[in-house]
Image 1 (tube, rainbow, N blue to C red):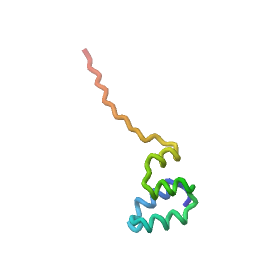
Image 2: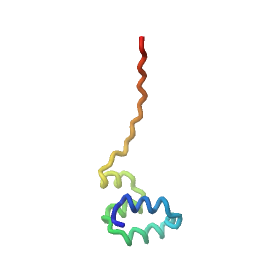
Image 3: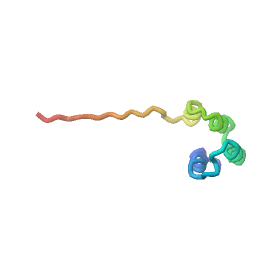
Image 4: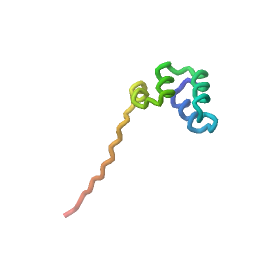
Length: 68
């Protein structure tokens, strides 16, 4: 379970992974980078998005086209 997506999905779907101890035990068994594991433990969203190189900003726009 070395893929960060798999680890996060497992954490979200397994009710036993909700405590800090369970999360630490799960991260010990994974092959994730230490920086990513620390970001998960510290709930550091900024660091996690930087490490994963993902876009954390979402834009929602509504365009109205009016015919004359």
